[in-house]
Amino acid sequence: MPGVTEEQIIAARRMTAIEFLRRYRPGELVKADSRGEFELREHDSFKINEETSFWHWKSRDAGGRSALDYLVKVEGVKFVDAVLALCEENPCYIPPPSQPEQEKEFALPPASANNRRVFAYLLKRGISRKVIEACVRAGILYESADYHNAVFVGKDEAGTARYAFLRGTYTKGKPFKAEVSGSEKQYCFCLPPKGTTNRLAVYEAAIETLAHLTLEGTADKWRLSLGGISAPKEGEQPRSFSFKKPLALDAFLKRHPEIEEIEICTNNDFAGRWAAEHLEKAYQGKYSMVKNLPEKEGCDYADLAKERYEKQTARQRAACSR
Image 1 (tube, rainbow, N blue to C red):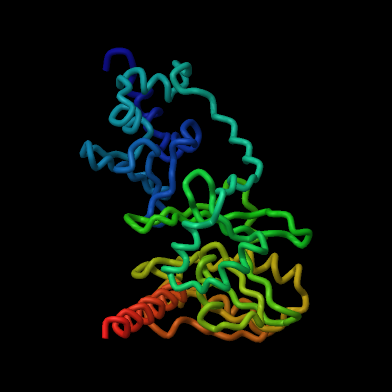
Image 2 (spheres, rainbow, N blue to C red; image 1 turned 90 degrees about the vertical axis):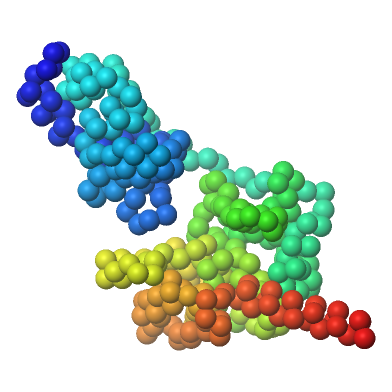
């Protein structure tokens, strides 16, 4: 082939696409929904497997495995230029590996003048006004000024905010959920008890801590959000998925040696049940383990609180219409 030799082409094909992207385009790779897959930040229809390096760009019906395939078919580089670049005979095309971005310093979003939208949202989700007000007074829940998100704050022993989770209050479309940059998972959102206790309940998400407290009505234990769980998807081979102890839970237990009982309140779905089983195995012996998943399959405690609220509202409307 004009411009390059057969040996150069063979050499250029040795680098896989995933190796090239990780080395020269790390900022473009984004975790995809499927385990072991990435997509491109600018092209979400592009999927690449991190183990095999096979990629497919669905919108362009293009695919391949090597870095050479990627450069030619995705970035539109001329074949000869791509071969020379990968053979380091024309390295000016490929920029040097980018330096990792410095982690942003944690800062809470500015607060709104009031918490009206957060109150309205959480009340409709079945969270009691008493619970919401207690969290607002404690400085662990407020409404952000920019997008009016509910901000769930995690604090350290000195009362300093070290973690925050944002939850959109708009009910249409897919809900917005995100951790604030620089958040420390060791200090996830946590509801303190009234008085002393040796009991701890753990949940997948912040709103579920509020919901379960609303349903039970007693602040007799610590209630900790794990900030999500690591579990296989239904249909995956669980044996290929290794369980990792939640950082939020391990850190909390180190700070609270008085804890003797852990109540597992994960969601009653495939992932939640898998996590509950492995949490029980990981901590039993040292702690008394209690599994207390929502009674209704496929639900979390936030679902149950909302369901109860909607039934109560329906009964009240029916009574008023008589």
